[in-house]
Amino acid sequence: MRMSVIGCGYLGAVHAAAMASIGHDVVGIDVDERKIAALASGAAPFFEPRLPELLAEGLGSGRLRFSSQMADAEGAQVHFVAVGTPQVAGGHAADLRFVEAAVDGLRPHLRPGDVVAGKSTVPVGTAARLAARVIDTGATLVWNPEFLREGWAVHDTLAPDRLVVGAEQDADGGRAVAVLRDAYAQAIDAGTPFLVTDLATAELVKGAANAFLATKISFINAMAEIAEASGADVALLADALGYDTRIGRRYLGAGIGFGGGCLPKDIRSFAARADELGRGEAVGFLREVDAINLRRRERAVRLVVDALGGLVFGRRIAVLGAAFKPFSDDIRDSPALDVAVRLRGLGADVVVTDPAAIDNASAAHPQLGYARDRDEALRDADAIVVVTEWDEYRRDLSPEHAGALVRGRVVVDGRSCLDAAAWRAAGWQYHGLGRR
Ligand code: UGA
Image (tube, rainbow, N blue to C red):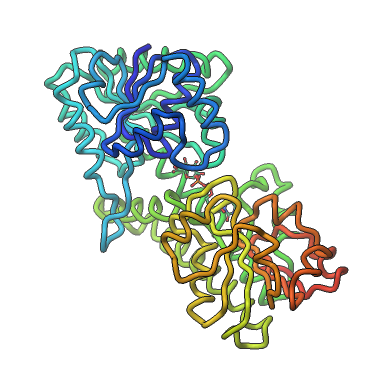
């Protein structure tokens, strides 16, 4: 099937490459010429496992192309809209300018029967407005939210937990759904549930899913606060809760909380939209979810300060991690970097290391010290703080090895990812958020 993908960021670039890998003929389009040039030469503009291989394969086979010209979308049967919806400056709502510009730019190139499939995360009600904007072209707009996680984007695109398509309940909507069913035939044949909904429900599924995940993380982080006050251990608590199959252990990872380009902004825009709909009260808890999340960063800083005797000024602190989570070089709203910046603000001599995100982090926060090499960051540190649970720190760093490099054996585990007993046995003062 011929497809275009408008917007080649995390979502669009992976979607384009993944669709080409299952045999579709795909053109990825973006206004950013540098991004397009990189992608066209096979270079992924961000760190995403398996994406470079998929790009090479797609470009090599001729099934995948990249362009900065919207006219190159012409002739495609499905046009996926995968542009970003950041938070508006000075507010909590989603900025829809890029989605609107993408649909308006696409309009002159649409033919009767084409399907426009929105994938961007949008406030409920957006799809119906956009559908009205393309109707006179004879194309049909459907909403097909994306649930991929950074770091697992290729896997999640090719083998999603479910596919959701929202469409108007009329003949054109029905035809458009059938086209998407064909586009995703491989995943559907492999057993992926394919859910057909109205436009509003499809938009809501995405917002609700991210709101739920954020709530689950903040729930366990709220329990961490209680554990800290009562002498309990949140990691053991999460394990015990997780065995209840109604609860499940995933997303009960306590620590410095969620960040990234999605969960934080998505819960805020969800609440902002609920306010507009006169139902702000229904999701009032999301403000609490946000507040719990932000408190954890402060708590991590407090633990470091207390562990160093109340003052970090002039002390050397190795911050292990900058990305908002492992297997990503994304530093958008990264709790890890936030902790580093706050410590620096208190006068600490901060050295940040990360396997993938140093370039992004140093461009955004040039005031911090950086070391590409983990051991160089550890050398002579008075304390180390683990804020992104990369395997390099969680699994591969032994307390004995680290102990030989540092000046002071103080470790703050911001992700509940270290073996506390092993670190203590090696003579370290171990502090974990919500941990005994
Ligand atoms: C999230 C959702 O998981 C995806 O389903 C969704 O498609 C995506 O947002 C999006 O809207 O585009 P992502 O932002 O890649 O994906 O990140 P997650 O893996 O969900 O992690 C988010 C944050 O929560 C990270 O900072 C992570 O460290 C933190 N987290 C995650 C915890 O603090 N504890 C956990 O137990 C799990």
